[in-house]
Length: 350
Image (tube, rainbow, N blue to C red):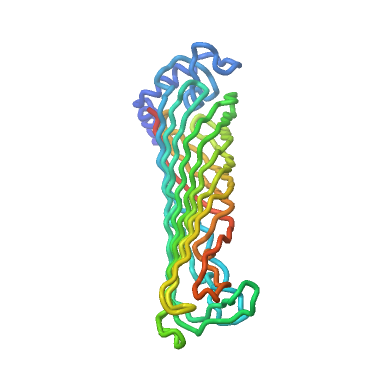
């Protein structure tokens, strides 16, 4: 009896949505084998259970907005501070950790027709920071390749931050809509931003220099380029589906380095800034599932993997191999970024 009442309540609740009548009418339609028959509109499998085409205006919506919240995992700092000196007391960036910052992603899709869709997607990949107090030395050379020396031992407070965002403006075209698969191919303009500042301040002055040492650096990377991609969705039932997306992007990277040191290799304040434009590329993979509560409302969960090549990290911008100049120089030492994301979110069609 309780099961019957629960089933009656669920059917009544779903019938309250205007899409229920649309689904009923759609099931009565005869499925067509050829996609996009003239004068018809594509109805998603939630309405039909199978890919069919009919004229129900409630099922076919032009706009869809999505909001997703999640967690990200940034690549951790690593490497010795300065030139490797084979000294057990040499400082190491590996003590700093980025602890899974929060991430937010919003999207907007507009259907031009049965095949073509424009979309805008923006994501705050996260903001992470860490701080630690360490004691040790820094390795340096007077000239590149020269004998390695070390600074006096000092206790330093090191602070490191990282922030990242990404934006996409593009177009999808449906190339297959035959049950149970739906496949889209498209292209987009891609923007990626990585910003990583570092500050290290000593606790006591160096005897030979007479000042408290400090060093600051900033690695600023801004990528913009073209992005082809493929999106495939497998319909499991009237409400459930799994999807995957693969994208590759290539274009230009604007890199800006800012290095400032004080009383480290010589008294006073010194700066060394550089900027350049270079080629860069990357790729993104996404795998997730979607649940359709109604044709308008959907919920999803997904895993994202983002790879970007040719990025300068904040700590890698420091060059301690030219101490004869009396200051820390800046250098373009590129590395790869591998970012992981877990998202849950909701979508609404209107």
